[in-house]
Length: 238
Image (cartoon, rainbow, N blue to C red):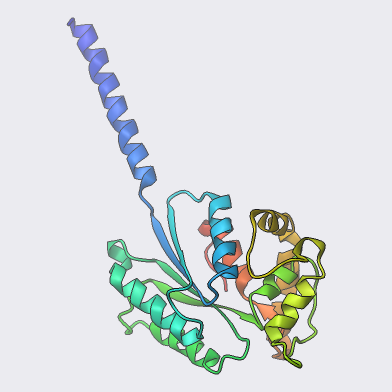
């Protein structure tokens, strides 16, 4: 091989090595998130559709539901255990942990929020950077309803229907959700994502009104999480 050919070969090899390193680096997640859902179906399916549709680079998102139980404190307990088993966030563990649960009729709702505040204290020795409470009042379906309408009329249990059932009943008045029964289909999710602008406006308006007058029913923090997943670089502002 001539000196010139040898030089070209070395340049190509160096370029190839550099490209491989860059490609390998792009596959390594620089942020890890854990979403633990109270619901086994609706929330899990919604966020799995969201994860798939966003195709986030360098972000690893784990989503689970049936493993943790339905009580808010059970969600927090499982989220803590899972995060601790993954090790410190500085050594590949989770950066953000989101506990997604409903107010509904849970007696431990406030306790779960307090537990999360305790875990976020500097001396708690919790491995993840931060745990967040992503609650909905009365239930996660209010976030879905906000894609179609704005309301601040409280949903309350009546006869044999829970407050959550009443939200679902209202959601079913929307044409594409007539047959809704917990499951979020790809078609459902696509329609919801087409209505994100309206959903964000309605959810933010409801949340602001809750903060102003102190009545959380109905409102949600789901929009904070969805906005964060859509634009991770902007941070979580819930």
